[in-house]
Figure 1 (cartoon, rainbow, N blue to C red):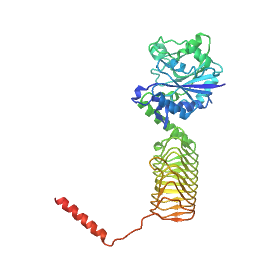
Figure 2 (figure 1 turned 90 degrees about the vertical axis):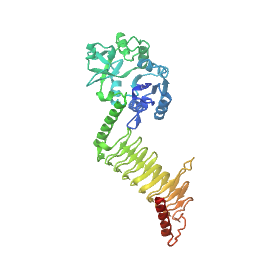
Figure 3 (figure 1 turned 60 degrees about the horizontal axis):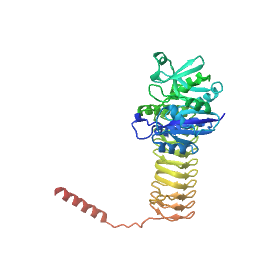
Figure 4 (figure 1 turned 60 degrees about the vertical axis):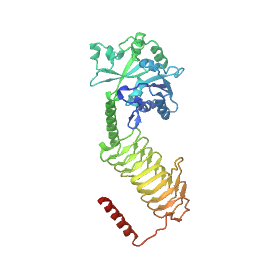
Length: 449
């Protein structure tokens, strides 16, 4: 059965006290709305529609970067969840199959849970995701009759008896597209908030002889983010789960509580991650690699046997082959390091290709930016770059070439050649002491005056 997603992401999130749209706040280094999109991806959706409002252009940019086929529609007035879903009506016109409604500020819904909802649709016209809360508070309640769901009542409209029901509404709903939009067209706003509630479609459906059912999940999956405090709590929960999964999958975390993961971090079995390491988005660390303490990685691939850090930074486009060594206070950006290459300390390598077994000495810098354009540096296999060398791109250093320490290299160096690019040293006997004596005397005279 085909499935489409409607993700509601129009809320302003005023309680976040932020000019940024709520769904763009990061969790695990990824915007909240992207978590919802990735959860729904397991259903292989025929169409993804994201309903935006406040900061719609910024949300659309993130959504289309994640899924260029996603359709973004605007909700210009905030009139409730049924009204929000109705904005997707035209985008889903003529699309067969089910629609699953998700929320851009609810990041922890699991793909397995959504698949269970799709399976439950075989016996129910509408399926609602529910949970039992430790403190039901102001959640909407699911009113059931045996195995069937009779209606959903919002807390502010509920009686005391209904508020005592422990089964709560997550807001996630699955139904056939035609059924969903037929029912939404019948929803009114005669309630305490004067809004068009999506939850009202359940009572409307049962009144027409349609069947509604409930799939349940742990409360943690349904956590919605409305405040900075809730975002911080969600981040803590996410990191705790990510660390536990890494350990369970055979990754050594020397001090788990100090390591921070992104939502898409992948670390292979047998890899070692030392203290205070931060993984940004799009990082893969293969089995047998070691990430040493106080390193920061994003947009990087680290192959088997490579060692990174301590105090190293890998930026987007860093591609490290097997057995590469990237040491302390080294930054790699948009560069490929071949098998066994070494950049052990105090260096910047950007927009470059480094050959296998090449060795870059301390203080090596690829001067890649002219103020307007970026230029590439190529270093051949087995080349040795002496300490404090400036490689002014675009430039190529050939295989097995040798660059003398302190050189500024501005032209290509052939394979196997020696290149020296530094000023001739001059020595003036006694002049150093005389100059220092003169300076000290001037400083003493100034202090007296």
